[in-house]
Image 1 (tube, one colour):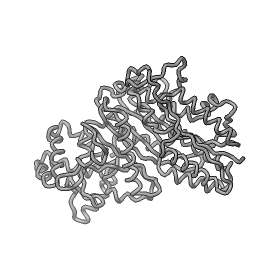
Image 2: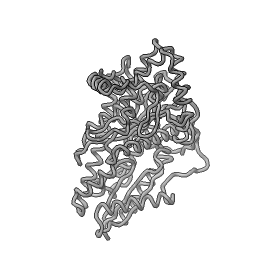
Image 3: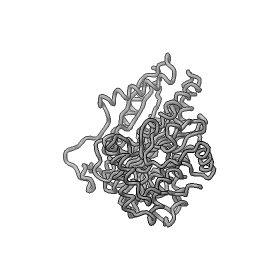
Image 4: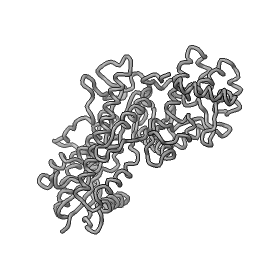
Length: 502
């Protein structure tokens, strides 16, 4: 018989990871998934049926592709691995699918067929491997879910990632929040990874299976290493940038680091900055296999520390998707890093789109500028951002508005939100008072943040006999948006790691 391809995947990963209400257990469950889809577990569960050198094609992101010389070995391997996973990890849902390798097809076509076969099986929700209720069970004292009573416990896996020496990651949301009522759930996802894999197929010669396997394995391993490095560097930046941060507990913890699929949680006020720093560190790295730099998008959900974590993660995922759509409008090759965020003050609505309905003014304009661009390579036009749908502009505006405390009455700054909600006419009326009108100059400073940029703009204004823009609303790529609202909404919920250079 010919070669057999198999794919193993943990389905509904978020349901498994976030089934606990404890932060440490969420992170541990993420590690469970990496372990169950890795060589160490395969060797322990299947013994002589598995040899990494002969059987592993590549692994990453919660699924693993393997190859076997005959169907019988493949079936016995799947039985051994899935039964052991069910025995050790309650609630984990594991899918396995195998197809014969078709020599008439290219390696890329075979792998695509394998993925399609798995998706078809998942769509039917048949033959997934999952431990069902036994009827009489011990209850988890935290969330009252059923627990099997067994003499052996599943092996304790290492942390998703170890903290720097002398530091520790928080184990409870209360520790993470650092006295703040909010936490930030950050979800990251790499851009255009499918296109990069397709290029690897083309570069591997098209018909050389072994070359294709080695290339995919190196590509996947480099992604894992590079995204982990970006997170480590983010933690180091956090340590060196936050005044008064004392050992041992850090205000950040990784939850998922599965290839380019990343989730971490932070104290609420540093969520946006940690996401920004992660993206900047990531874009400085290149994959060792294809030699190309990375780009990714981020979604940041700021919620109360007692808010259901699973819902917060779903919101962060939706925000990341929103950022990806915005980034793809600017560059179809996926080279733009973008970010979207939402701060939840009350009960979350059914979807992000429904929540964003509240950001429409009474005269049909938009309050928010987000999603925003965090970074983009030279040569990519950011004209559609209008120079204001960028993280730099938001940061400049937010810092400027934070600097107004003590100068402008706090109540007046807060009242601006109500005026903006009522629309452009009401906003102009509210801004007639000189104390508040002076705030309009902040948009110029935030848009042109260096002395050279400001001088250049001053020259243009003088040459063309124009006036400095002093309106709270501006048309950006065909949509009228408020330049102040994002900054005012986040004024008490965002700390920045460094000052914008003048």
